[in-house]
Length: 333
Image (cartoon, rainbow, N blue to C red):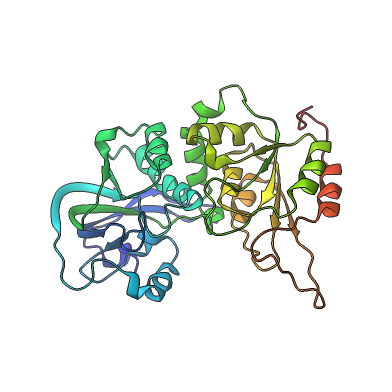
């Protein structure tokens, strides 16, 4: 259920919304139970009124189904001990926020809270180091970052309107605000080229590699691309690289949320396995006016695709797209 439907406090409107854009609201709940690492490390859950998962804490209501399917793996079942905290908090760790893409969705609400001037402590569990680094870059001190390892009931917790990459076009000011607060990073000189192929590697745990790298990299070299694995870089380095790029391409994965840090009206080329076509940056591209393209590996009823989530990039199509890129300062050369 929505936190706004169960709150006993009146919500605050942070932005009224207009021109077809929704309002951004804030509401506080008393006595929120936070269950850290309820599945695997970094996968956590909020419970209000003893039984309700606030929709705004998971952003995607399918999280309930995700949890239900893994019922036997859930920690903190039955009777368990909890501790109490008097803190007023904003929870930034949910079932999916250990994934870089979903973590940047959490940053959308953090940026708005910081803009509002309200000082909450930010609660998380076993998240990657990039979480604390990115909060620090938004001006949040270590004293306001709370890592929780045991079930904890907080005196008060704040929730914002559920804004995700799936509905961002309804709340474009959320992305505008995050970009504004990260602008000092983007103002620094570039350290990488303006045409980047984002490869998956260091943080890969569910497939999605480029299957034909030799052929693909030969093609990329002809068009002045640099290959990067964003997972090997700090958050600051990632934002800086993406902000100076004018073309981002590569196999589908969380690395594509970096298109939210590019200059408006840049070019995005996302490659897919035909068994996993799940574009998650369309609304980001819509907000920023990016020129978006998909390349889906070929398959046929007589020759079914056999590589699972790994991506056999169609280099004929890739070359066609790259040959149409303009030369107005977008090339590395």
